Image 1 (tube, rainbow over the protein chains, first blue to last red):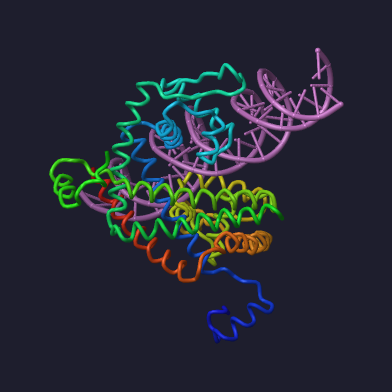
Image 2 (cartoon, chains in turn orange, red, yellow, blue; image 1 turned 180 degrees about the horizontal axis):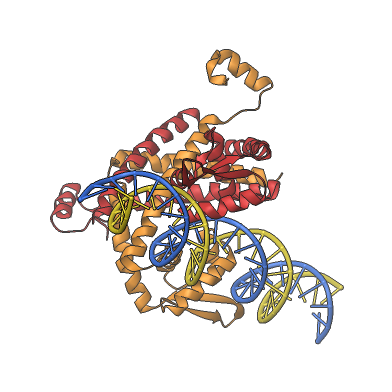
Length: 172
Length: 172
DNA sequence: CGGAAATAGTTCAAGCTCAAAATAATTAGC
DNA sequence: GCTAATTATTTTGAGCTTGAACTATTTCCG
């Protein structure tokens, strides 16, 4: 039924010759990777909602602003969060309404909007980020420091590989 | 500035005594993990859309049905995909409209609905799954077999750790 | 048996997400 | 200087997602 039953030597030969590679191991790895991030992401959403009545997209946007001291141009936020520009517009709209950020047009180029955290935004973010660190710490608790290091390296390698693969895929 | 500069012996002592752990390395790892899955997921969405005019949630649901020969109860799909029940209802509704699946109430318990793939659904899924494997293969191309093995193990460990951490977090 | 509790799904309102089209402002080329 | 192309963002329409409230059905147990 499956190629895993047959002699590995023959399998390798036929595979190269005619059979399309099945990428079984890669697929399993992708599923496991997805499971991990879904588990973590869902837990963060839940906690953010229960503890702070806040959403993950809003938190993620604030996190970008925290890292960049002098505010960020909308397009830059979109790029960093890997979401569409229209999406950023909508989230900023809501953060504006809740008073976490301000939006100002750049005088020298009135097309571009700069988003900045307000003082209250900064305070609220700090409280959430502290807890957020605890949640992550709790979920990653079963990993040794060496595991963390190793995962960082391997995922770095994967990131590079994925970027290259996407580039190749776009040319099609 | 950071605790990484100081003597590790002193650091460990103060950390336990008073300073809240900052979980810096864990946080960086989580961000990298998230970047990887977002990159991969976005690419799969894009290809699914461009090549087949299909969405990832629909594809994921079909993938669950493919694995389970005799159809699946809605609640089981919800659990496996880690999404809400209402969400599954909506996606099944659309797959029903496009003819990829059927939905039948179980005679012995009329509350439960069983979803099954149709012949056309199975055919459409096969075509997409084949391509899907190629996309994954391309993106994971830069990883050695040993890397894949290693990542599987480490992510398995992470998965266990995360599940345990979530359980501890729920008790709060 | 008969009502209370549990279980399986659906509906709903709000928010997130995208791609495509539209708008507005700037820059480039003649 | 004036039009064309480019750039930054917003708008729009469709689909995904959630938690909470609701409906329908089954099970529990007195």
